[in-house]
Length: 153
Image 1 (tube, rainbow, N blue to C red):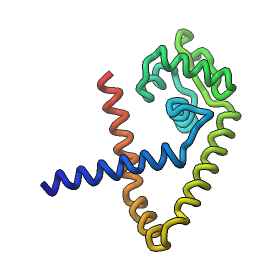
Image 2 (cartoon, helix red, strand yellow):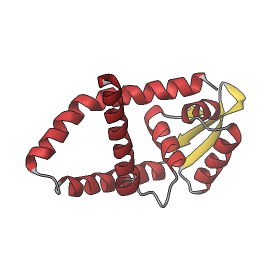
Image 3 (tube, one colour):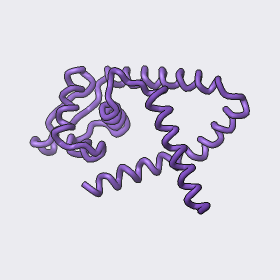
Image 4 (cartoon, rainbow, N blue to C red):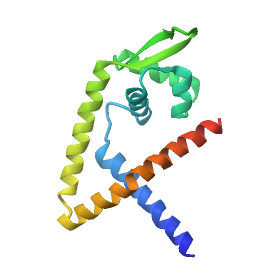
């Protein structure tokens, strides 16, 4: 029972964190979640083959192609033939996308800073300490989930 309670509490904390992010921090009228994921992945990984990007984001090839076309029309990504294999496509973020991602990060940080100001100083510090410990573990869980999703396709 204690293990089940621990999983339930953890699952609820994850759900609440997702709600906080999607409803109050990451209101992206200008970009979908998939578009943000593509731009973030490209900004971290650098130019990437379209097929690799499709696997990393876990959406279908046709859906990824349409998404990349929309991002390209907005001048957020560029496409080019892979120099090692002309049949493959390499996708890269543009400077415009980097600027947009930075602006959104600054906006998100400002929203979070405001929300944190609604907490007591001791609650703010407790949250900072908890995230200092949990942050790397959550990143690992996210990487594991992505790896498992790729393996199942």
